[in-house]
Length: 259
Image (cartoon, rainbow, N blue to C red; front, top):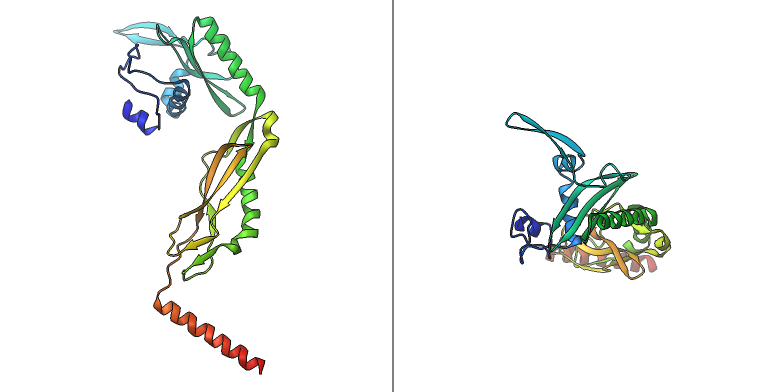
């Protein structure tokens, strides 16, 4: 479990027991619980289980009805999981997954004194998120600004000591095509492009030469790297001789024409 937490980049999560009961070195955070949940929901079987309100199981030939303890499942629009929890130190906890109009949010409430409080707080957070945030197609904004920037600036990128004096560029894959933005702050979104204007050969395909930042005022919402489309080899002695001959021939031709 700790190995998986490390793979997921969780800095404030550590497991000691498999059952989750209180231990000093057994801890996590609301944010990292949301990351764990997001990862787990990619598993279809897990997603199906946490979205099941009630089912029948069979033990030693006897059937038994079991019910999900998630009080929001089946009672709040779009809720499709995930898990309730309680220990003396953690209090009443609830991790909720809600999907509406193709968009999913994960809500984590920890440390509530009662089930009623954790339910009320969860509903408030979920409704606030869906009411106040709107998904913006950030991929379209990035591509539009990048194409415009490329037309104006690609010719100014110098390849020093390269067999080719020019190069072609492209964008790396975006982590997200859409990002949720507070409706009142959509007007603050801007795209910032930072790119080197002098490159030293040799260069390799997919070398990072710049970055595009999607900003909301001073906050960076997401970034994407600017990459080279193809490698550029460094000039060798033969290339320099050929360049000298070409330049000298052009000089003589211009001199003759001038006479």
